[in-house]
Length: 314
Length: 72
Image 1: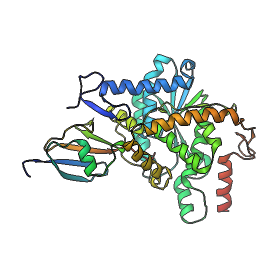
Image 2: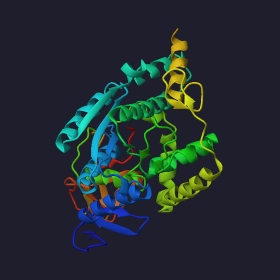
Image 3: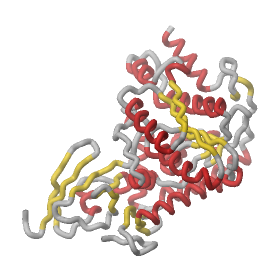
Image 4: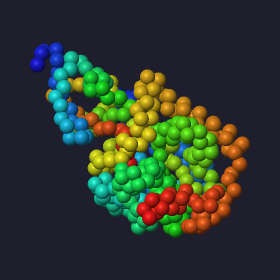
């Protein structure tokens, strides 16, 4: 039996190669939750949570469920309130299954769950976007459409609920992958924009925080399993088509060879973002001609996509 | 089964099951290597609890392979 390298008393449940440690359940749960508190502290929101409402974007996956679960544990101590928001993108056989789990989780935690249907709000489901793409009626990347619509609807729902912050389940692995995607696209603006805490640049954009920013994806899975959150093992059927899929494998191979690689990339990303924020001025915003949300362009990205889809269908 | 061999039962989250033969004294890490799985992307669960890669495997152990990466 491999004993915990911290307390030396109980069986280890996770090996943290990048730290050279193996932790038992109790020590790991403490380690995990301390990382969340550190993320909130580094985001500068920990001392500013009292009396606030945090809208957690939840999908029923391990990361967003963990985010909801940990924040629910912290909410009494730091005196804030929580609401879960699920964007139902309309992927049959996936979203319906995850929603069932999510409703039960929210019920057991005593957290209100708000469900927003993409088809009703944006006029199309992601299943339908895929069908159009397959039939070559549109050239849009469906995962990209899903991401833009999801962010847009989550922000709008949070704003309508009067939330002070939106919390998402992005973990360290997601952040490192996103850095590479932005590098591959030459998109330094997005590197500056997205961080542990997304600075609000307009009143109608709710500040975003990422409590799992310092958490490896594997740590998130182990925490999820230890807390016995039995989510159905269904994946988004379109995930293998996402460019993240390949990046993930490559980064995890590097991490296996050189433990700590992903952590060092995240630290580099944070330093890079700090420097970029000093030289990239915040965009000049106006109101989207179609929906009225703040945007640097005539139409916000979500409305741009809506127009492209409508044109393709007309 | 040879005397210096053990057999473990492996259950994947896809529902697939396998019986795997390994040299006695093998660890979870050896099993993952044999199955060509990256420990960074896999959690091995025994009796409902995750086990670390350095854990030695016992004859007849039933192990669940949980993929860490998910798309949603």
